[in-house]
Image (tube, rainbow, N blue to C red):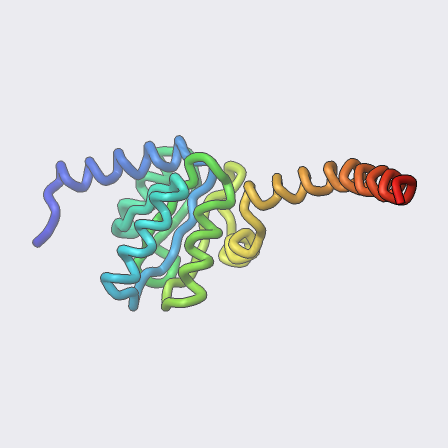
Length: 162
């Protein structure tokens, strides 16, 4: 059944607010996903504070234009879903990229750092470690010299007590 004008306007409003509020948005072709796979995608997105929404290409294009982005979703392949990263810029690409490894989902483009990004850029972002993983690496790098110093002092102390 076709959507009413009001329903379409509600979808555009939701998409527009998503494009404006998000740090990044990733578009993916979801053709071929089973219901179970789509549910798993939505669960993972929700856990990572990523808003995932499926809409027609024309509605996505109109919403992006209203939000100030020159995105023509009509030229992108497949049926589109949009993942909005509300807290972490890389999270939508990471989640959709992880799901695409096991399913037929394909990243087709997006918006990153206030500009329309290509499929290649979104795929590259999906392969980056998450923000938490990067922060853990930084902390480990900073903590490594201190840890080594403590181990050295302990080794000297142990050598003197023997």
